[in-house]
Every structure is written in structure tokens, then in C-alpha cells.
Length: 327
Image 1: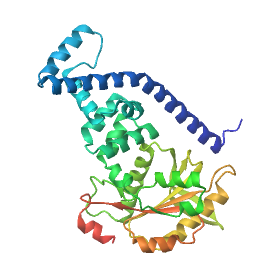
Image 2 (image 1 turned 90 degrees about the vertical axis):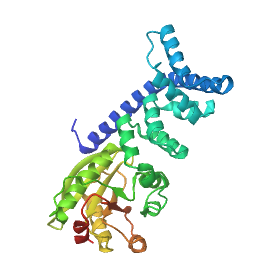
Image 3 (image 1 turned 120 degrees about the vertical axis):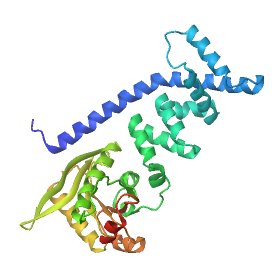
Image 4 (image 1 turned 180 degrees about the vertical axis):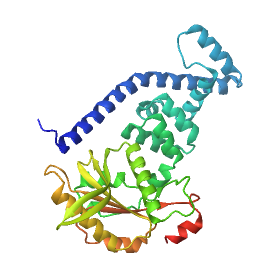
């Protein structure tokens, strides 16, 4: 059997499905343990309020439980304090069973440590369940303020609703971010536009792949030929959830209406020359230094190819003298 590109993409998709199913099995085993932790934490809180127990009682409880269950881990004084925090954060048992108990105890600890807002906590729990994030990936997403960049972002410039079926447009919109916040550590002061775009490529690729939202990396400066001439797409991905190619164009300068024409040209070339008949329409994403929202909306108005426009931020990363060169 010939190993076509489409076949390889579907194998990648199936592998991800297996990984996610295995994770769900582990989570099911851990669920009862997490609910036990909730009950222990809840009982300690109740007895502290009813009997006036002080903080030192936790040390004694830990000692007695360890003595009764010497083979059981997770009964340290520190973990008992987490149990109290956990039960206090989610006082309703039914809700705890349906939401926070669906992720591991270590994921819950990370969220309790790093996120104080309840709505934000629930958002990260749901995203962890949805994307199967590891604990490390979850921590990275929290530290990069994903909730602030994506969770509260209701105005994402795209024409997905006009150019894609509802099932696809909602997913495409959820995968889009605005702005992208990148850290260009170690870049020299004499960095030029190409150097910025090169670093952008590295950061975009790392972010999309670590998000675990179905992106498979195809290549950078991907070559296409149209009318006997060569052209190069900055970055090309395949998204197994969307079943579509995703072309990413990077601009170290502010957005211009002509950028939409360039991206539209690339999408047409991919749809006609690369896309498999079973694939969905190719999606374009333009990431630029900045954008005027009104100009971007006008540029997208009437465009028939699905595309979105985002900007990236370099706040406190590059010297102002470098940023100003590309404004």
C-alpha cells in the first residue's frame, strides 16, 4: 500500500486518539482518589469550624493516617493542606465530581497554585480536559496567560463564519489567538526584519504544536509553483481536527490590505495543487506586528477563502529602538 500524505495524517490523528483514550482511562482511576481528597479536605474544614481546630491538627491527622495506611501515598501534611484548599475552592460535591475530578490531582494542584480567579480556574480545567494537556503544558499555558489572551478574547478578526460550515468555523475560531505573545530572548540589538520573522516562525511552531490542538508541522518556507514561478509560504501545517491545511504568513510590519491578497493567493495554490479531495478548504492565518481593526475588517470583507488576522506582541522583549524600525 502506498503511504500517501493523507494516510500519514490520518495515522497521526489515530495515534492522538489512542493517547487521549489512554489518558481518559488514567483519569477515571484517579477520579475516586480525587473525590476522597475532597472529602478529607471538606471534613477538616468542617471540624476546624465546628471544633475550633487549629492549623496544627493537620500535622496530627497526617501522622495518624500514615500510621493506618503505611502503603498509601498522598497523606503528607502538605497534601492535606491542598485537600483543604481544594474543598474550599469547590464546595459543591456534585460539581467537583463533574468538573475538577476529571483531571489529575497534580493538574488541580497546579491550577490551585497558579490561578486565584474561580472562573479562570474552571476555564483551565475545561481546556485541560478538551486538549489533554500534560501538567507541564498546563503550567506553560497559565504562565503565558492563555486565559487573558484567548479566554476573554471575544473579538477575533476572521471570516470563518462566512466561509466555513458551523462545525468547522467554531473550531477554527477557537484555535485562533489574538494577540500572540512571544519571547525573543537572546536576540542581538542589530536584529533585522528577517531575523524577527525567523524567530516568529520558531515561536509560532512551538506554540501551535504544544497546544495539542491537532496541528502537524509540514514545513517552513514551503515551496509552491504557480504559472511557472516559484513562491514560498512562511509556514504550512495540517490540522487533523479540522482535516485541513493551515497556511501561516508572518509579517514583522503592521498589517496592510494587500497582505490578504497574498494570503488568498497561497490558499488557492494549496487548494488546487496540494489539498486532497477529502480535505476541507485550506485556512489562512496572518500574524503581523500590529493591525488596525477597521482596516482588517474591510480587507476581509468579501474574501471567499477562510482566513484570520492576528498580531503579536514584543512587550519588554525587544528594545524599543528595534521595534520602532518595523513600525
